[in-house]
Length: 246
Length: 311
Image (cartoon, rainbow over all chains, first blue to last red):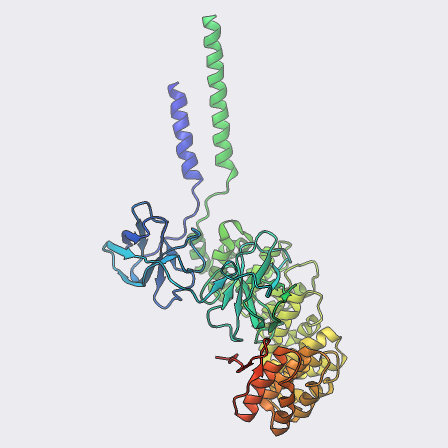
């Protein structure tokens, strides 16, 4: 059986090496190892690293793996100044809004210069949240529904509707829908009727970045089109097409 | 019996070894050679035309989001990437074609206008919106007639991006838009009116006022508000009595930036309009015109101040 064992060993090594995916490009410069523990909660939190100047509520430059049972995390960063924040969402997701009841730390300034950095991060429970997801709103009988589609007209799964009450849409959204399912359909309840402005996107937080899927409810004009909802009305067929941000 | 067992075992072992070797060969040969994107990018940056072409081809590869990684590399190549991009701009692969045209738009490649126009006209290409977008980024006035035609396209994405691109042309698009407007089909006319409103050129006033009783009057009211020309005041005051509440809302909205005493007098009765959002906009505009805080009745009949729609 010896040749067989050797052969199996070789096959396993080759398969392991051959099937590895591209893990991205190496950053130049000596990498700084960042490790530590997130004290509360211990398990399942993520450490988000932002470069200085980035929107701290948008997508991070890099995100750690979820912390282990002892709260430990580890990642490596190229030299530079960063801001770190730990977050754990009750729904277990690594992205999306941090809602009341989720855990989040304060923002931690970091300078990576090659020497390992050990952090102890406290992440208390977040209380209160200005943005409200569909699930956080009572089914008021007032709302907006429609489809989110891609450039081919196909339903988009995993996107959210962002609802604004100011025409610039530059502030944080007032309400955010749950993610769409495979049928691309959304329904967002609103506490009252009024004039709203809508965008659909696959990411949450910060201005849309190149490569994101994004679409505004408009007709090509500089300002978005107003969506007028009356009390007690579910306004239907408010469909939005998302395309890549180029 | 013992000899037969041994023979069987040896046979099984040979079979197993053969199977494993086959598996190894299949695994080893079926996957493409590992892609070294950094090396390819470096070669492209060094001027290797084949590497540039290969990099552009990768814009069609969606596995692991590869094309999203390649897109910035291609656009960072600048003008050097344009010939290879033009070569693939009419690809049958709709993803590759979309990314290629987006790259040409980002690079503002004027020499690519003919091939992008071809894509805009090609109804079999489901992502034609990108052609309308790219023409606006490039800003070649020769593409304006194509964008005007696209205002009446059956694809709403194409219409939206054609409108946006014409707005990007700014005052250079005004004369062509004014030439298009009188003979345009209603859907195209609506797009042209929106574009003229956002450009805000006073030359548009006369034709907009002529369209004030037409099927796109709601759009006309909005555009007149953006032009901020007091000569539109009377037409907008008439719009406050429109049968469609959306048109009344647009007229009320438009009077705010341009209205005078006549507009103020006309807006006061609109505070009793049966539709709340019309009352709300009347109050907002009346405040802009008169400088006084104005309340309106909300859906529950309570007198409230309109919130500031702009920060």
